[in-house]
Amino acid sequence: MDDPCEQSFVENQDTCEVLFAYHDRTKHHFNRQARSLGYMDWANQPNPFRYYEGARQTKLDVHRQPRPLPYHRLYEQDALPAQPLNLESLGDFFRYSLALSAWKECGSSRWALRINPSSGNLHPTEAYALLPPLSGVSDAPTLCHYVSEPHALERRASLSKEVWQHLTNLLPDGSFLLGLSSILWREAWKYGERAFRYCQHDIGHALAALRFSAVLCGWDLKLVQGWSTVDVAMLLGLDRSDECIDEEREEAELLCIVGPGLASQDELVFVPPVEGIRHQIRDAAWHGRANRLSKEHVPWPVIDEVANATAMPKDTRFADSRNDIQSPIAHAARDVDARTIISQRRSCLGLDGRSTLSLTAFLRMLWRTMPGPHAPWDAVCWRPCIHLVLFVHRVIGLQPGVYAFVRDHTKLDVLRRVMRPDFVWQSPAGVDSDCPLYLLREADCRDAARTLSCQQDIASDGFFSLGMLADFAEPIRRHGPWFYRNLFWEAGVIGQVLYLEAEAASARSTGIGCFFDDAVHDVLGLTDNQFQSLYHFTVGMPVEDRRLQTWPPYGSDA
Ligand SMILES: Cc1cc2nc3c(=O)[nH]c(=O)nc-3n(C[C@H](O)[C@H](O)[C@H](O)COP(=O)(O)O)c2cc1C
Image (cartoon, rainbow, N blue to C red; front, side, top):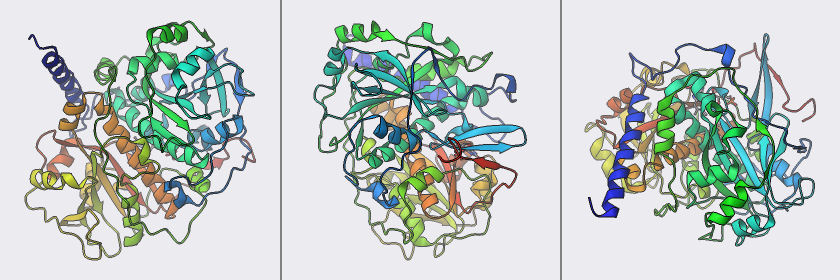
């Protein structure tokens, strides 16, 4: 093979096959779940909090009452004037995105919940901020690790002003960099091979949570393009193998720019570090060592394989243009403060199986998942690839049945072609014809929804549940294997929007990572990996578990 372009295309194809094989082998089937330990190894349950032992800690304020904002304005551009970048605003930023939201207690068990949800409450996502010199942190540019338990920043590295200048040269004042990583072991401890998928969902939820929180600070948040996974790992210090045990290493996921006035800058120039700058970052003063999370570990080699296969190569850009929609959303009459909604978000443990949802509220939730030039969708810089397949149980004015909400109208024809030929694809009566909601089949689909979501009652006892159907093989082949992660992130962002929307409607929701993949595809008539369901979700009226006690996240008054 002489042509180097052709060679790289073929390598790309091979790597795609690695991740397609990973995706297939981590499907749950009726008679066989994806490989995991098969029991709960409580003795090795990972510590949910990562600390860098020996790193100096700066506590952030948990008592501040930042500026109010009606919930619906979270989805508006420039909803609040920009706050200056300082310890107070950083405290607000993390407080309403990744901080603790409550402590729960049941018998002798006690566990923390956070603003962002996480599969199994295992919280593999870690966050880092690269800050300019800042009063109260350091007079040098500093890489900090955020720890939610004390709501604090740990000082990981002090960098030179030259490095800071090189990296942020063309960014507006008051900007900083934010990086996310996954501790793959945290999820693998419980879920085995399927864990990599859940880590990626969690990144999507965290990305949306951070984007909403940035709105509260008057900031924008944009994904950085063109940096390789290796470079992100280097910048966040995740490749410093002697400062973390190998089994608990963090996989670099993404890098964002956070700050004021970024929305107006179409092409943010943010070049990857040149060799000299890389050396300076590696040779900087690094502080602390990652705490050990478990005594013993079980290796899951396919997770390392898929992580390698989906790493972002150098100089990669998203070539797609998004198809932003101005959605005709009617605001809810009851508009609570955004911080109240964000802080009260919880997963439902049970749903009542009888309450109903108005059609207006249902459509509002769906429209919120549409891409637009506002939070959180302005942080998702690719054309939407996820469509919703809805199992509607109790929405006033809609026949119970299976529906499709097509988030990219250019995909309508192909979806009609590949799904079951007997689906009717009708616009429901009472729904505006501009709305891409289609009835596929009238049916009482409560049993099917429960069965497909690993027999979980929450999928049948709500107003509706849904599967997030991703345009899968072709975009991954076109963009590259790394786009596998982005598909899960998009699903996680949709999930975070639905979590908040459910709270705003005085209801509750839950992400559902456990579902029988190919059984879902069979029901829809899908026979290959052109489309794949990546994530399920349910929304309904919660039934509280009265055995659980709830405590505030940071002492009595926070
Ligand atoms: C990706 C993902 C998958 C999840 N899958 C399930 C599930 O299959 N069943 C379930 O009951 N909860 C599921 N959850 C909900 C989590 O268990 C919940 O987020 C976690 O316990 C923390 O609770 P909180 O959301 O109330 O903060 C999932 C959450 C996420 C983010």
